[in-house]
Length: 337
Image 1 (spheres, rainbow, N blue to C red):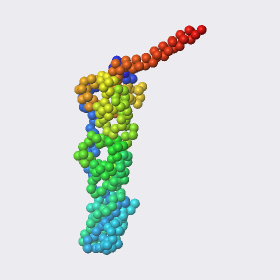
Image 2 (cartoon, one colour; image 1 turned 90 degrees about the horizontal axis):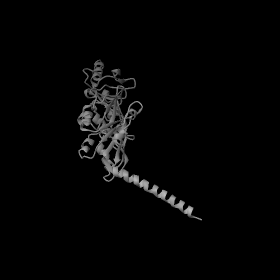
Image 3 (cartoon, rainbow, N blue to C red; image 1 turned 180 degrees about the vertical axis):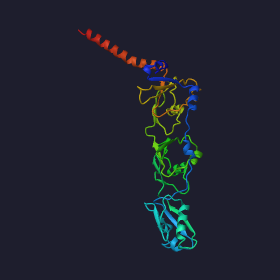
Image 4 (tube, helix red, strand yellow; image 1 turned 90 degrees about the vertical axis):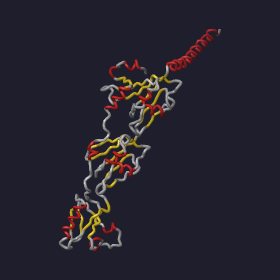
């Protein structure tokens, strides 16, 4: 691999890009905003009751209504379940369609119905168990139990903190928040904790954190430890990739020949890209520190000219020995009477 070979159009299948300060600057200028504005602007509404919620309804000075199972019983024993059809039954108030109501709206509805039987009723409503509005979590979390939306708004940071990320296997660069049928991709490595705290989750949201099983780059050629390197973020730089491979081999490598080969899905439709870094100068590694590698990239470090010549000779010497041995054997056969 060489600059002259890569500069050949090769029928348009490969394009050579030099890693320069100007190119790095152009890539930083076009980098998109990591968070969709609609996620940052969303503010939760008041909690609305739904099927599966348990409600503790207090009517002051009327323990027979507040705790029909007895005041010694646990709160859950005296709570009212919102049934699957969204209704609940309360003495003297009858069947109330509670689904979709806020806590205040339900309290007013019960107060209105009890007024016919209880003079000036003082009613309070509290949700003791949330079962209707859930946040679903899937993927590389240590805990994927659904989290409940409550009267206290739930933020992205709180949900992630409760679920706990499996850092050894998670792809932090692509958290997918699905809301109302639309997917929002969030790079957890680039947003601040303050931003996570300002993103409120909506009942019915789904959080999926992918695994990094197939997220690797491949470092080959004249490095100390050629290997496949997995990573869990999108901020792995060329410098870090070379560092994990032990750096350039000081004996055999050519600092002039550091390439990043980036393929495409359809080579017939668009060319692959080969990025070239001339790493002979220490300043080149400042550029490498701003170059972000992607999953599937191949980092290839070429050999020095003397290394190539030495390897050529190492292959040539056994061949010359073989030819010499064959010639000697022929002479011996011809000399035999």
